[in-house]
Length: 527
Image (cartoon, rainbow, N blue to C red; front, side, top):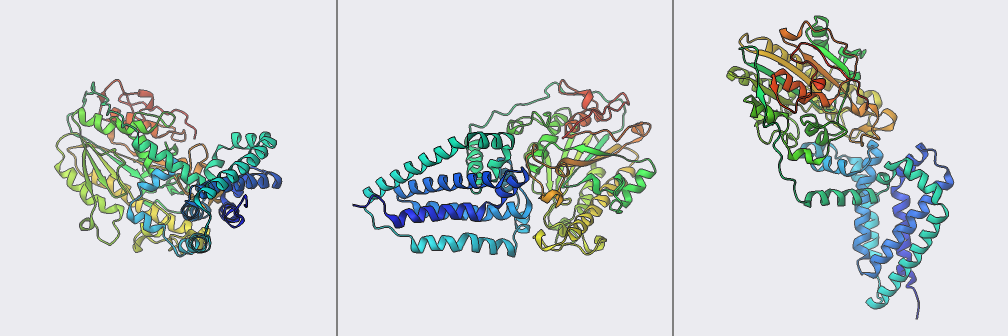
């Protein structure tokens, strides 16, 4: 009797080799970046091949080889594409960000290159496995052979790991992102983590700020408009010194001393799903975790203190921040064109201001410069920088075209911010102010990265540096501020409490950009 069914065993080895060879370019790129030598790269490849072979041999023993092999390949194909195209890593936060992406954003990621990649590296090998792999071995023999093969492969893998322990331990200890670059292991392990979090017993909602009381010093209603930007980089705002005129209206406002711009602000995270809940919470970038969503945010506390709170949405949702306040979504009736541009929110804002008789905070959540289809974020009338990239597949465009499309989207943001200020300048019966702050930055091919979403400890500065612009009312115009010191999302909640003069034990005066005493607090914050 044969110990092994050679044909079946060879399929396990072949599929394992395919998994290593076809989908490891993100891993190899990272290893080269970390100056891992060719020999070490080969050892890691051998280790992965042995691991996959052992796993597939075990699946053979359990009679589910075809299903497991095809599943691994069909997971690996799209994951490897997006990692290669945009330089992202697949970790639990990236998966959450992907899950919370709406249909429109998902459609922007679809391209001919993606379907070609899926066909050649996903469907073709899957069809070959399904058609040509067959086993007529009795199930008991197959079980024994599979277990024996897995055991032998694990033994060899253990020897390789033991013989190279120092090299492996040093590499993985110093570069913890490597595990998120191993395809498809990264997607599978991250999915398990996200699923586990989903089925964990939800934390009981914690109501914060029950002691919140407003102490008003003026009689007129106070209105604060917070514009939550999307994917904006401060180094592409001409008001911050960018040589291209991407913010002409803001430039004029800055020249006349009407706005203050913080060009060195730092985001809490690199994805909307993290940054938006974080920036409205009382946590800091260092202390933020998923439990924050199960507690009151600053909008809840303001509402509890008697201040009206309204959220106007033109993005993919408020990420639970607006669950307990008045929320309005832009629909096609609000929009002049098929695409709802951010300036369409001004009509809703104008109506709210007309109806305002008491203190109110209004949040405008932009679509901003959301990529990769940057060209969709600006109307034809604002396509000033040409030629622009007119594809969501950024590999089809030059760096210049990508930047042109991105910069055109900032012209829309410039008009939105200036439009909000113009609306707030009109009424004389309210005391109004405005803050614009982006949720995170964006990589435009810098260092080989595109888009955003890398973990904070790995993300380049371009993904965490954000613009923060304040339009002060009369009480703030006398301020002298060193706006070249860095601030962060940690400041937003406390600045809102300070603006509305809400007293609560949650308030930290050191994190209030403009406190009630007329002084400015700016602390050093580094990404």
